[in-house]
Image 1: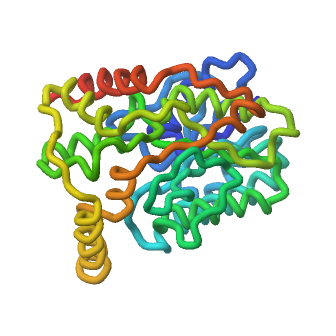
Image 2: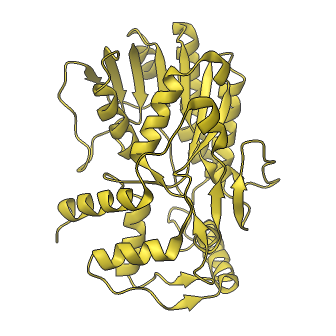
Image 3: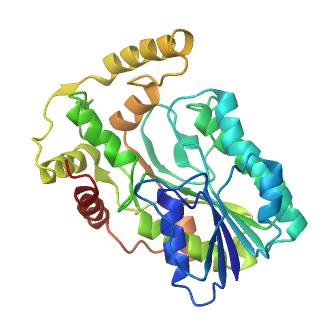
Length: 332
């Protein structure tokens, strides 16, 4: 089996590559990304060929498909709560279009697309939502808009595909979700939003990598559809944040602020960013407030029943894995 992994120099992509190396029936891994970073470097193995480049460049993508490829795993994406539609479209949709074109010409066997459950979010509690749920009339941000458009592209492509929507990946290598919380705390900007009782899903990156492998190997009857992937065990968000902070030697957060007030502040910050400082992400967005104030968890029974997905690593274990990695790699 020959597999193309996009976004292979990022958090998720690098973990996918590491896992695929252990599979005896994976012969070659073509790993592509824009560039390596401090935390993710090339893995030395005769199984892996790294080719760095820009997936928005059609000629670059054509070169990738000159190699024999059976499976495409597209986890390349611009993920951010803020940015222009054009920026997100180029990163999430132009890349998808180029990969689909190359995949069709190469007659690949299956296309695994990593989407996002942010497409469900509607500034209110999002509880036990399944894949058949009606999406909000107005999606929360340009990231969610372009993820839906990229999903529609693969749905209409004629390729055999599986769409996976992981919620809040955590574990060793995370440079986004948990580190953002830590930076906000260190900058004295992190406060409990709302009651502090809201529950959320997190997803151990190791569990999600397992889900990808299941999607690669599942029968065709389970393809051409979408799956929510989480740990299936919602936790109190602010208890988890305080656990992480205490393990890092910080004091727990106790001060609370009403979500209604922060929504108003975030709205004003967004207006300023849109019209005065368009190149700078606002410190606070309404999406960020909503995610931190509301309960957000999903029904994963479809993935369990059809793919055979069983979360193996608990959220607690994934957080401890992140903390060990973070302390090792971020010593001051």
